[in-house]
Length: 229
Ligand SMILES: Nc1ncnc2c1ncn2[C@@H]1O[C@H](COP(=O)(O)OP(=O)(O)OP(=O)(O)O)[C@@H](O)[C@H]1O
Ligand SMILES: [Mg+2]
Image 1 (tube, rainbow, N blue to C red):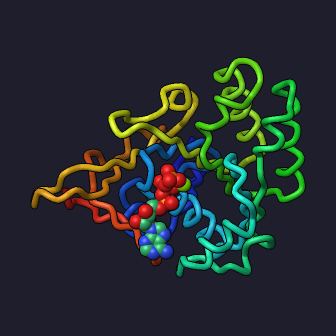
Image 2: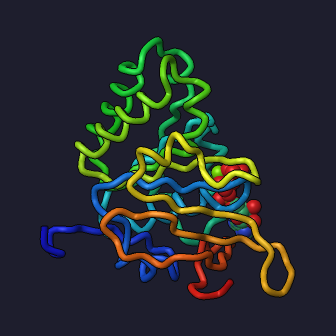
């Protein structure tokens, strides 16, 4: 495959795209993992907001069942995303009720596929995917495998966010099925302060930056300061 055939989706996150040859491979499955507050949801929303700027459709699955109104309150605080885009170019779907009521993997996967068929998104987010393990009937690993296989058939790049405990790097089950793993961590900076960091752990087919890079999360979104430790 020549480089021309290897498509990428820019994240629109300041500092990040140049660390990975211009963006996430398309189609692919990307795990963005980190403890509470490291910016997983902000990162995911920026990825979808960049899609809107490029005229693409986005689909945001929440597994926490945060009501739309609740989510919109937070989104209204971000300066990088247009609240009006929600419901139009970005569809917001609660997966919680389906996960709790389903008696088989197929029911959950069919529901997800119905949503995708309706929207035909280039960019999909499942936030956080780690909750699914506690809710889905049957074997979690098999479910994750089936989910990513189906998502790729739909020609989309999917960001799966993974919650971890502070001493954990990433959810191991999800890392197996992901084409890329991006870690968001807390660490102590060279000045001795606790700061947030991003590290690209793996990205198939991509010459990417390594090591940890300082991150800033604010109302303007998530930004990466390449080279700063
Ligand atoms: N509107 C905002 N203005 C300033 N800072 C913000 C804003 N929104 C988010 N942040 C910063 O980003 C941090 C993380 O946000 P985010 O919700 O994306 O993290 P998360 O990893 O998804 O957390 P969780 O695991 O709890 O879901 C906040 O704790 C805050 O420091
Ligand atoms: Mg979150």
